[in-house]
Image (cartoon, rainbow over all chains, first blue to last red; front, top):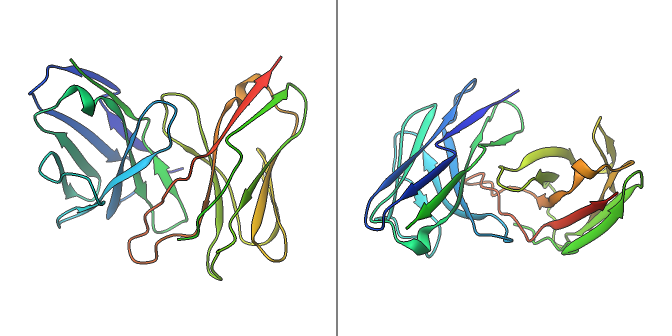
Length: 115
Length: 111
C-alpha cells in the first residue's frame, strides 16, 4: 500500500531558529500533499495544501512566511517553521493523495518542541 | 464540505462491540464517508470508506442508512489496542481534494 515517510519524528529547537520537516511519498507520486498541525487533545487542523511545482495554498490564519512549504518533486514536500517560538510547539502531520486509488496516506508525524 | 458531528468520547470493555455514529446532514450526492483511526503521536490511519448501505473489511463495518445523513462505524470485539480517536470525514473539496477533520471520538477500551 501507499507509504508516506515523515522525518524527523521528533525535534527540539531553540526559540528563533528554523526547523525543516520532510514528507516523502515512498511508492507513489503525489502531486498534492497536505500539512496539518495538531495540538494536544485536539483534532488535526489543515495548515496548507502543497502542490508540486507551484506555490502552496494556505488556510486562513496560517502565516505563509512563517510556515514555508516547498514541493519540489512528486515525492517530496518540506515544511520549514521559521523563527520558531514556543507557541509553534505542536505535532505536525503530512498527508499525500494517491489519485490513482482513493487514499489519503498520512505520515507518522513530527513532534516539534521549541524551547 | 459536509459538517460532521460525533460523540466526543466513548468507553467500552474488551470483547464488546462498539458502534460510533456520525451525523452528516448536509452530505452531498457525490460524497463518500470515510473513517480514520489515530493513536497518540501518530498520523491517522484509514479504516473504512463507504457510499451507501453496508461495507465490511477485516477491521470494521460501516453502516449507512438510505438517506445517508448519518453513518455508524462498528468495531467488533474491541481490544485494548483499539483505544484511539476515530474521525468521520465526509466528501472532499472537489477543487483541492483536502480533508477537513472534525472533533473525532475518543474511544477508551478498558480491560
